[in-house]
Picture (cartoon, rainbow, N blue to C red):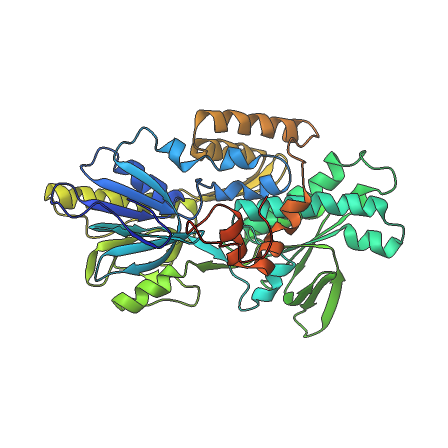
Length: 474
């Protein structure tokens, strides 16, 4: 494929020699589909808006200083470097033409068009604010490395600013952390902030007492960990309370600003919580590509943006298109990594069967391997079907399962070291936070996409000045 300042079309044309497989997304679904096709006689183009494969279940540990971003987000190119039939392309997919069989991606003003014979869409999901997207300015979500690094800066920065504050009410505001959403992500984040305040930072400050920090976990739902059975939700709530987390259920967020959050209780009463740091861990919204594909194929799309797929993960009238992971809606499958992994492998196996002239499996059958969530150091909950338990052994099992799915020996080794430092000792190996991490997202949103193009080596017309900001580049 060649590139220039404008629209780009792949040089690879249909030759009848090797089918062209385009995979959208480098998450669990996309990556495992690509690896499943490593020996297949196909040419794979994996298009993703980031250059890494993100182990999203461990993002909260990046945000709280346990792990570095590199340990949970290895480079996709490095993972696939020995797979000669796979090519990695950076770009956000903005259009899929099911008639022309093309995928269009854009990065910093450069547009690329990729032709396909087989398409696997595994673009995942982002944070949902339930129609209140303005909340994102003050309450970052937990869906990307950028999110985690911003939250790390906000969390550690709150303690630093509290050390400088003199007014008691200002110290209280800075040392109040609100986590919205009592699902697995919210529970894990609240538990780690509480441990950070009460163990790691306990002796690090002279003016403030970090152990006095308030960590509030709130949700409009009536229970903690709604996806789990009541027994495990109650065990998680009991443990969180024992380490100082305040749990407020039946509380719906109605407003968020720089200084706090407004919630409405079940009785309709509204109250305000003064808090400098707010973290949004409630709700997901599937990639906009689901809606786009629905419009072209007639497949239904639900309120969360998930597209209904056939039992074999294809779209109506389009056996060459398969949708996997958080984007798809099928039999109320949960939005967890195992669904994406198994779906990606199933889609790849279907492509292999078609190439070989064999019949494909008529239905994707998900094998539930259970759900787990950590609560605090040495404590977790595990739902393994008929077996449900909590405590230390659930925590050990959580460690082992997550180590298996961390990609690469180096990442596994450094992850274990990071866990040893944090769980056996009191330290956090990744406490570095910068102003750029905290304010970069908001600054870029205010400057707009033209700034990104002109200042970061994006699309360039030689002989023409494209610095639309009016500033001299460094």
